[in-house]
Length: 421
Image 1 (cartoon, rainbow, N blue to C red):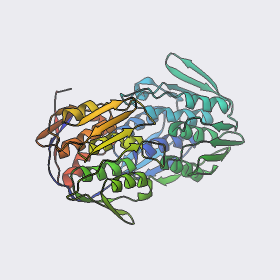
Image 2: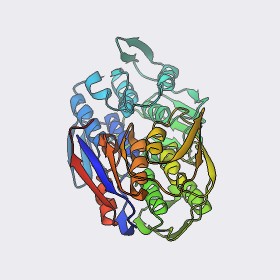
Image 3: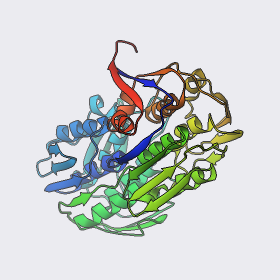
Image 4: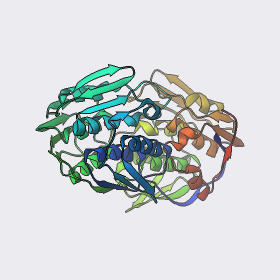
């Protein structure tokens, strides 16, 4: 097991590139189950969640080659429609195989998903979608068993916007008979990219980028090649690293429009941001960071996946701020660990009240989930002394060797093998 050892206090300087988005790649990969052919997804990050999905897809019979961020998937010889517990337990995104398997083969048996260690995230919306499209759904011995001769178009309305359920609905409806209309659909860039990919396969999805989608089901879909978008959460994390260390860095990032909510809040805190096509300059040199409140929201609002990192930044800002998570009400496992570094934070219901302190001090802290890990690394970068971040396997699920990027910018951070848990 690895940990990070961080000697805090270094300024960051230089330029790094943002990797491909793991959240979009994790839905593009199951989408290849919709066709029988050779598919390619470029700009795929080398992170553990991707390798977990590769193992699951290979179990289903997909032949995969992965090199130089190019992912080749041959879906012409699917041999199983069963996604077993041993794969699915590791990652909630595994449930994305439900819609494609069901709509193409008329049958899917998918283990109830696992994933991050914090909070329940039920999949009832996914199941209700499949029922709306005409599937028979049974839950047996921890598995979802879905059957249908052929799915049929339907009207689907989400009372609560859901990225995962929207993605599964789009994939299932793409081979359904007739037209499906989805209202209050997720508008995240990852969903728009998925729609573009399915359209490249030969389906017809209108309304991408809006909350209303219209999907005309096809009888058959063909293989396709797509370029993955860059990771807006990695970009936001690196921008926050510059802010918390009062530094000036540059990011090569080809979809800056996806980060507008984070840009706005950083600028409100005093950070200067300049965008030159695909180059973003983040300038926080010699700043006194101002306290800024946030409320997380579905895209294009402030992302819940940036909530923990923002709390780390506000821990050393001037004044008092509040961070409210309206998406996941119990996503605050990072707070006790930030307090170990000297932060002054109180959690009340689904809000954190942060009183900025002049200094954080290094300590041994433990990661509990992916984004919590990122917040502890940020705290370690600015803390005096040495910070050890344990259980960074959580971080490796979604960030590709982030310590190398931080080192390239001047941080003193090392990955060390340890027996500590």
